[in-house]
Image: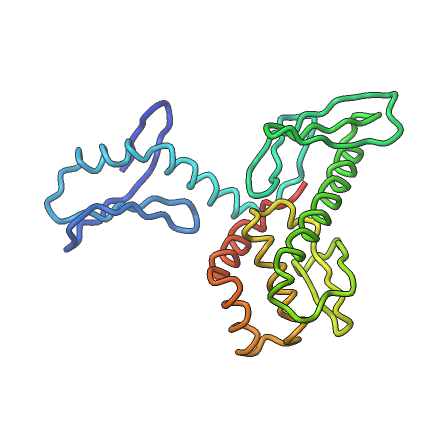
Length: 235
């Protein structure tokens, strides 16, 4: 079926089943399926769709964008980036008097100040900002969880890894991916706890996961966020 509301059109399929309430489901391709009790009138389904219209459109777009994968950002256009789990618009300003390009976050925008308005320069400034923020955030998180461990990390570094969010080696050196600064604080804390637990257990055995679960009981939710959202953590 097709329905248009608020200038937007949605395609959906209705399946009538032996159930008590209406459920709206979406597959990995962004297709909408409505499961309704047998005998439900179409008008009732339409009303529910309209009530949840904004959320359905948002989720459908996200699913389709995820299938497309990471897209190259063009900062000459209106672009948005993630920071601590929220999406903010990037505003670019040219200032030929500055010695080094820099970024200022004002709670509403990611403001980038550059000598030359070029995508490469903007990305360099953003990456430097994320590196700095990630280092400060991670160090604070490590400090807050240190009371759970008898050993301390020897060093904390930020990296540009393409495959891991964090690592801990046998020398107790912790390394974290700069893109973590794009994740919600709960996710960052989980990755920190995960790597700190490796100071005790270098592998992923049962003892390791018990310790992770003891300190971060909801760690599976944070892993799920990373699995579902890592595709959009880019600049």
